[in-house]
Length: 186
Image 1 (cartoon, helix red, strand yellow):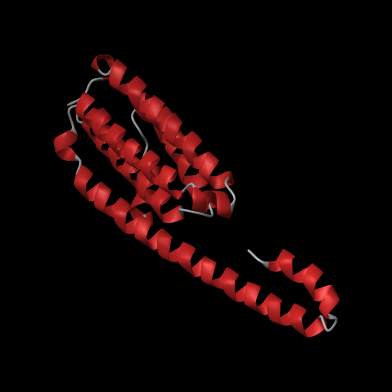
Image 2: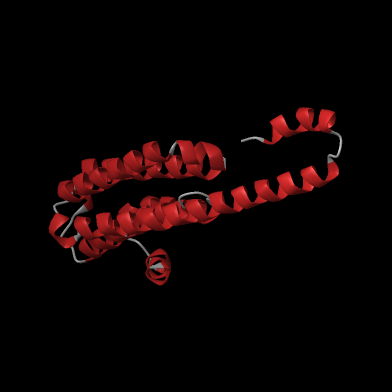
């Protein structure tokens, strides 16, 4: 997937899509910096790249005309700006907030896929995009991200148990233990 994304980022877009491709490059860079939900955010960026690649192909083949696509281009730009803001917020979100906001992130990403479908319909290229495949890629990425979160939680649990053992070996005074141990509970 990343190789194809690199190819798409490397193409020279038609003039009407240059701003959209610039936003895609920024989005991909932000996805690479994200810590939580990285695979799912990457799948979203990949879906946007597919949309832009298809649009670029259609504009180059003159099946789409920029002057007749003003409103869809505005909607595309708005979608890309919203995705960029969303990914930037996700990139800055700490682990526990990302964990507790996971349902919100999932619903926001699903809304972006709906908007990708709407934009594809506005350009009348929905037959050229496989939205169902995009959604199944998102589902796969979501489960991979979940596995990563579970692994991170297991590591945190092991670290906490190690801390308990370490503190327990140093705390020989029971009166001191009653003050220290409550702070170690999660």
